[in-house]
Amino acid sequence: MIDAVSEAYSRRAAEYTELFGSMGAVHPSDRQLVSTWADGVDGQVIDAGCGPGHWTNFLAERGLEARGIDLVPEFIARARSAYPGVSFEVGSLNTLDVETGTVGGVLSWYSLIHHDPSTIGIPLQEFNRVLRPGGMLLLGFFESPAIEGFAHAMAAAYRWPVSDLTEELTSAGFDVIETHTRTTTDQRPHAAIIARRASAE
Ligand SMILES: C[S@@+](CC[C@H](N)C(=O)[O-])C[C@H]1O[C@@H](n2cnc3c(N)ncnc32)[C@H](O)[C@@H]1O
Figure (spheres, helix red, strand yellow):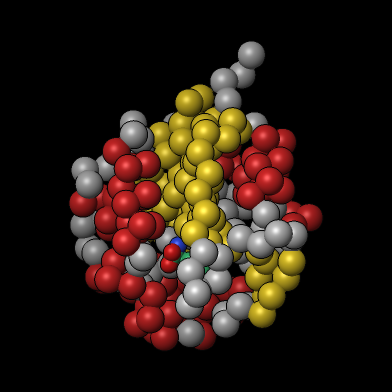
């Protein structure tokens, strides 16, 4: 599955960047949500599955030490060229090359949509591992009343109920702090969850 995702985004990196790879393409309420979340992050922030890097740059412009990571070398090359002052690297969300407990925030904005539901716990546990206790995760995803696959333009993807992802996050060691949903007539329903790495007792 990872190979199919990587191959599809590699092939269409230019098209994706043109359509979605700028803050102008972002819904104003998403921009507001990420801004507010980012203002509460203390320390380094990872943009996990950064694609063309516009969110990474947005976080860096807000004064955060931001680092974008993505599977697709074409995205990382484009991000480095567009935002030369920002840090980007190729990597997998399932095995982040990041020290345990060192990160203040992880933004995973639609980057887990292609994970099979049986494997989504792997990157969630990885996010939990790299966050310091109290570190914050912001997860954006497509929402639906039941977990269901759909034919996303790039590769097979999944929509999730907020309640099921909340369970996955809890199993991975997070406390869910806030949930948001947005339904409009012209777009798939969207959702976001803010979760904090639980302190080890
Ligand atoms: C829908 S795009 C979102 C990109 C960006 N976050 C945005 O909001 O435009 C999904 C991104 O996640 C990346 N991705 C998916 N699975 C990944 C994995 N296992 N490891 C690293 N990146 C992954 C893809 O390469 C792609 O850039």
